[in-house]
Amino acid sequence: MATFFEFIQEIYYQDRKGEKLLPSKLAELHNDGDLNLVRLFQSFKNTPENHDFFSLRRVFEEVLPYLNSPVQDIADCVKHLTLEAGQDMAAYMLLAPFKEFCIKDGDRAKALLDIALTNIDEDFDHLSTAIEAGASKDEVDYVNQAVELLTHKNELVIQRAIFALGRINYQDKTLLEVAAVAIKKSSESSPTDIILATSMRALFAVVSQSDELEDLFLDFLDSHTEQLGDHYIHASSEILFYEEQKVSGKVEPKLLNICCYTKPENKGTIDKIDYALERILKSNRFDECVVFLERFFKLSQYKLSVKHFDSFVRELHNHRGTHLSALITRWLLSKKIKLGKYASDLLRDSEKGISISFDQAYIAQENKGVHLFLARKACGWFFNQPKTAISLIESLIPDAPDNELTDIQQLIFHPLCVSYPGSIREHLETLNKSKDDSVKKIATDVLSEYEDYRTSVKAALKINELTPSEQDRYTYWQHHSKLMNESMKQARSKSLLTSLFAGNESVLLYGNKSIHYIHHGEQKTRQEVPLCELSTSIEFASMHNLDPHGLENMIWQFKAEGCTS
Image (cartoon, rainbow, N blue to C red; front, side):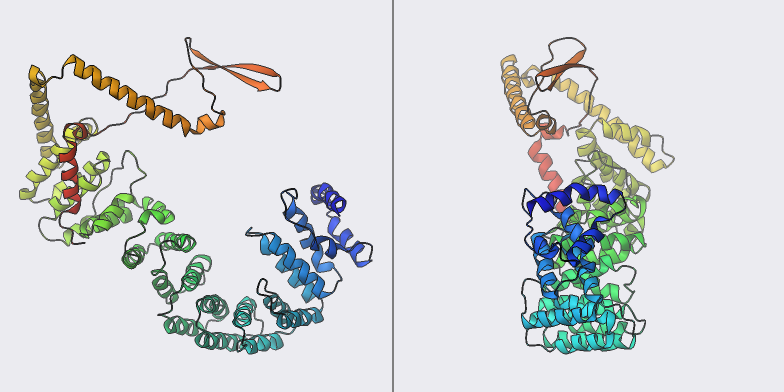
């Protein structure tokens, strides 16, 4: 047997590039009795030494429809090869050629149906394949048989019959209502999570083939508003994602409402919802996305951040001046700590921050004091991204009342300008040329105030009593050097480059080139690489050193101010 599979493996790829004669030759050998292909593959295992398991199984897929063998033998072989594939996405690719095998002879579908009902296999579903294949030959008979099975005493049989009804491409359109009504009725009799999930998928597939049956699907959704199991919710997310072209304006809100109850740990469901939200946002239905997210967060007790909806967030960033700006404004105005954090999460991947403005439409709906309130929120939640913080505050200045401008100006000076004299001063110097008088005035005043602050700091440095002794400075730098060395060691141990080069490091003694030796067995090649300059800049908030606890307390007050939950 090993020799057979070795031979197939050797010629498989050559045959794929040529005339593709291998499947037909193997089928001919099997049907002539010269080779029992089914028995050979029945004992074929997915073991580490069979690294080409799927390639060889692909051969059986291509041969299967043309084999002449008892249905039981083929069914057992298909089950074996499918289960051997494990959780691989290609595991169930044998079902299509197996269905084709059954269609070639009407008696095969009947035989497979008898096998599936005589010995109900909990590990593998032959029933739905039999019904699908049979319906291709005699649609009325097999649809009616499937409907009758919906009252079977075994729930697994019911589930598989429902699944089969959803897989049929109905040629006789009068059967669509028969199948839809039967599925809906069956789900009411056995409303388990698995049955409801299977029923939702099958019923949607059936009603999608008619323009007149959507109300049956809507009634089904309305009938099960209290049954919100994980499988049922996941089925709704799959329909939203995979069937986007078929989901109507009436169905989509109901499916989204079901998805609101997704548990945070169900990552697969969250991913489907994420893709659906991205699609909805692309169709310019921003408000629907926001309503869904806020309801989902509330129902899940804010255990999952918006950053887990990464496709949706990426699409938001394509609309920085509109949707992204609106969502940040809305959530900072919400007076909810968690939504404020989620607003910062929307920009978390932007290390140096981005320039963005508040949405004036949201601000106009608020009472007085809103401009200073938002300025504090921007400073609190985006303090570590000064570019973002100052751009948000800048957008508030033109429309801010005079009695709030003084406090906003002081906020820009301290803690922002004092903490980030590089980036904030640079931004203020740009604003100094603004055409808006209020923006220009604040920029000028803050820059002037900062110059006075620098003069005071320089004067303080001349006071000997405030200067650390030489011994204290030496002790501190020794301590700092030790911390840096330990940090470097930890960084090297986790470094991608270190792992790529097997932990080997080069020490540069002198010169302007780096020398590497590449080993080829017992020989080695010398390679010289010119040195190049690599640099990066990081601006740390100076207040972290001057008054870390005071700064932390201030930032926390800005974040929590006015929040009711």
